Length: 326
Image 1 (tube, one colour):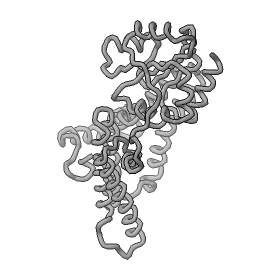
Image 2: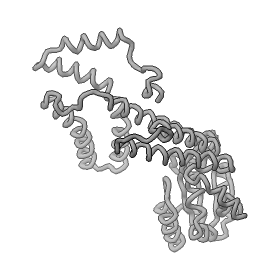
Image 3: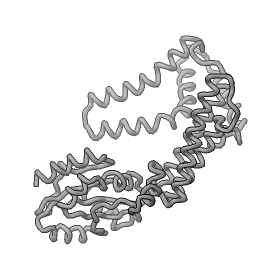
């Protein structure tokens, strides 16, 4: 990210660059071998960018088992990558924007995006208050960069960017105030401050889960369900979506009311040790967030399994179906 702002340059050593350029320049047009070499060299650059969407497409295709869908998806991916290259080549560079000062602004945008992604990934290991401080610092820095503290210019664009900078500056200050007030959720920076002023507890509570560790613990819980539906939740401290479910979904009044009619069991797989892996492997769960439901006889209701994040409305409707099927 810092390289995007010009602090240093990330590039191949000049010796390697020279060799690649020489190999590429020696290739002659109209020859299959030359085209293959140029394609191989370009794959070294494009490959890392294409790998994530290609992997996602292959996972979806593998799960669906649909050959037609798989062929269409890969063809669409190939066309999406190939057509622009062909258009740029046929146009002899006329469709490619010319280099200029605007490229520095593009680099800055990507630098901010990389810093934001870094903070988002750090949510898995750092406390919420520190994450709020990081988001606040990033927002304030962006606001200052956009000219929030500079005198207004005559240009309409200049005023627009300054207005956006002022908004980011205010949001950053809100994050810092929320962190100082004991908040831990950056999407609601002033929630804890508002709750304290109202004289109520800042943290919303949801129905309490019974924590288990192993398959044996789960078996005992299912035996002692008393004929109720058992909601079995896989949780981990590094799972951002798990925490998001606790903050936004489980605390919803409608959801909380339905959860009270169930036996709530939760497995903390933060350590990911042998016992945790055995517990996930037993039900084919790759990792959290994942929620399984068991009927009163201890049999999993496989059609009602949930994987990933669900908002309060979706989750409440799903719980209604589970309770009705019991």
